Figure 1 (cartoon, rainbow, N blue to C red):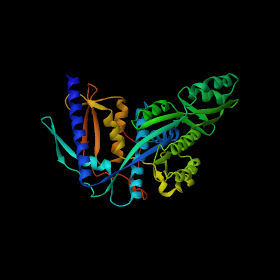
Figure 2: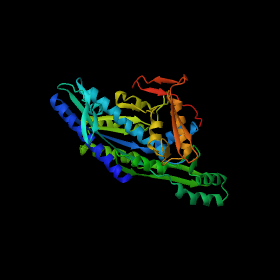
Figure 3: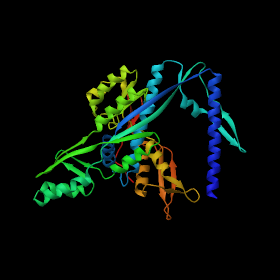
Figure 4: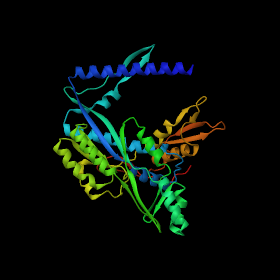
Length: 387
């Protein structure tokens, strides 16, 4: 029975979508409006995003028990770049330019007795232009050598190295300790899989880690063939005309010369440092000097509740069940949302494992925030979570 209901819902949704598309086409024709197509390609260095998100989440006492949430946050940060690119291209095109997706979202269709009726027609600029950006991103990463390091560290431990012994101990917990840093890679593979599972991810390239272990344990660790692969793919995209807009998402300043190459091919270039998404965070001088071609990292207040709703499924009555995340993670997402939003969401666990969702209006508590001077976006201060 549920299967048939699902098919009916899908059919209704398809009819509504077709009706909206038809309404959009007719509205554009009536206004003699032109659709301007742009292909946007983002090339993403994943390690920096993972490490920064992990640092922020653990710093506010968020429980990372799977790679699902941190991976979804990474995908949201990557996809947000296309919103920024769309606005930048719109400004370049001049006046009387709109966003095609915004017009489509404005259309309202009602489904009555098996038929779709137009409830609200879109407003279209007469003789205007409407921008349609076709987004895609590719990811570049190296898998941390957790398994590869175990044997050489074990060898040095057996020779009496106390440093190797300690490094081996935390390695078994999914962490790599270097004399200059310690990184938690327990959920890196799940993070990568979650990002690669996004519908806009069109490809990936995997590099490798170079490392050296000696009497003092692990002394050298560096990611290889990631930056080089990004540059090669960028050049391929330019020569093969795969993109009208190219964006590199990385904290590395070595990609600045790619901008000059893009200009020769009349391709717009941007660089986003997605690992730096709070005010006051240092951004490389060369990246910041890009001016309008630099896209600041973001963390939007609606993301925690968006992720939470994606992992809820209907239960009995008005209850909800969790799907793909733990109860602790769900409660933390609600707390995360409440820490950076005025209206509050609370999950009330029931004895059968389901939840009641309780929403409350603002209680007068103040959320610390500022408006970013460059993007005019609201940036909020995230505090330690309680859940």
